[in-house]
Amino acid sequence: MNKTKLIVDKDFRIGEVDKRIYGSFIEHLGRAVYTGIYQPGHPSADKYGFRQDVIQLVKELGVPIVRYPGGNFVSNFRWEDSVGPKEERRSRLDLAWRTYEPNEIGINEFSKWAKEAGTDIMMAVNLGTRGVTDALNLLEYCNLDTNSYYADLRKKHGDKDPYGIKLWCMGNEMDGPWQTGHKEAREYGHLAAETSKAMKTMDNSIETVVCGSSNVDMPTFGKWEAGVLDEAYDYVDYISLHQYWNNYADDTADFFAASDDLDYFINSVVAACDYVKATKHSHRNINLSFDEWNVWYHSTQQDDQDMRNMPWRSHPHLLEDIYNYEDAIVDALALIKFLQHADRVKVACLAQLVNVIAPIMTEENGPAWRQTIFYPFFLVSKYGRGVALHPVLSGGDHATSRHDHVSDVDAVSVYNEEEEQVAIFAVNRSVMETVEFEADLRGFEGYRPEKVLALEGTDMKAVNSAAEEKVKPVERTDARMDGGLLSLSLKPASFVTIVLKKETV
Image 1 (cartoon, rainbow, N blue to C red):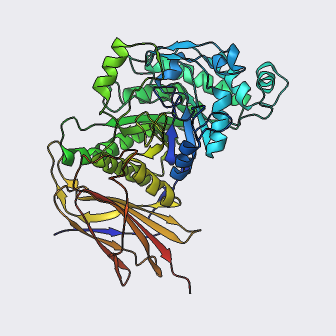
Image 2 (image 1 turned 60 degrees about the vertical axis):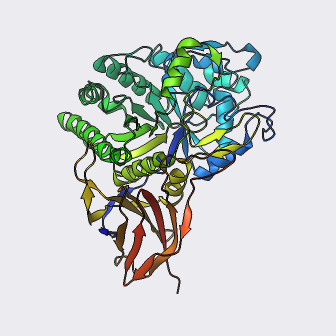
Image 3 (image 1 turned 135 degrees about the vertical axis):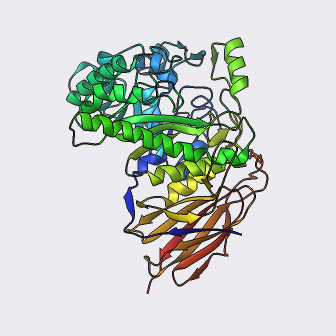
């Protein structure tokens, strides 16, 4: 039997876990908004038309921030169309997803939804077809309590108090040729810098995110980051990363190795940030906002056909991936990797939240339900608050079709001093072998396992539905503790959450 050892010590600090790494994303795309978070007439709908069954699941996930309204959608978004009396709003054609946008839900309504869901808003501004002036007008509308035109307009629309949005995205995926208003690196970097500078002059309490490459495979990756930051470094706080994973090859073992590529991606962007920091003789870090991440490939072919052949529909079924067991394991690995980089990854948004490549699905005339990927997010969000500890791991490894020396186990731990709690998150990436896992906790005298929750399965393609949850955590009671050493067998292709609490005398 293979063995892996993890040393857990409170002095091996990576950094404080920013709760915003458990963020998510709502875009005006498919059924994310209409029949997702909003469906008047649904049995669970409140007076605003918000589905309370969805809100309860969002609260269960513990999502502290939600990126809105896009995504590709934002690059042709006219925010003025989404506010004020609904009967006076203009409908629009969305070029990103070739759909019809009625603007029945906009910033006024979404601010109310966010408050009900107990989450903050991460707002994106349109730097594709618009620019500095429109971003300033939107900021004034959302955040200022002044006797000025757009602040007064918000009050006229019924919202006396400002929304107080603190985190703002400077556009979306601006290096992508698919993006409306696509730009070159320095052209975009200059626009983002000027926009952020002006917005911070208007409201110096906000933080801003500049667009990094759309993904690690972009031809300009690395050069884009350096070029953009050379223009914008002094005026922004974060740079974005986006990444989606797929298993088109139907190779589970190699799919699980994707988190090694994620490690490379994060390290490369940190290196680009720090290179520009050095050239500017700066003393401040640009940190990372991984504001789109997930598995995404199940629905792609059908979606492409539908957008091409049936354009300009209102809230069609798009990007409705039905996730399986192995997808949940990959998402668990991604969350572990974010925690391993907690010193620089400060924001992360699971894309997306409801119906569109999402952990939560809705039946239009029925219930909301949890996809397989709901559970790793739920477990890490719930127990992964505190200080991330550097994982000193030793054990076996294996090769896959495209990766050499893939460690059998990837893991991380989080110490919550206030709660006197240690959480260990571990994935056995071997699809064939059980691993005997040992955690050395002698630095945490008096701590004992409180619960062990595991995602375990032999059917990598098992899915959940509204009728049945085939994939959900099971509680294990076989963890052994002896002299500060915890032992537990990790089944093949499994994810475990081990929660330890300090014994009270």
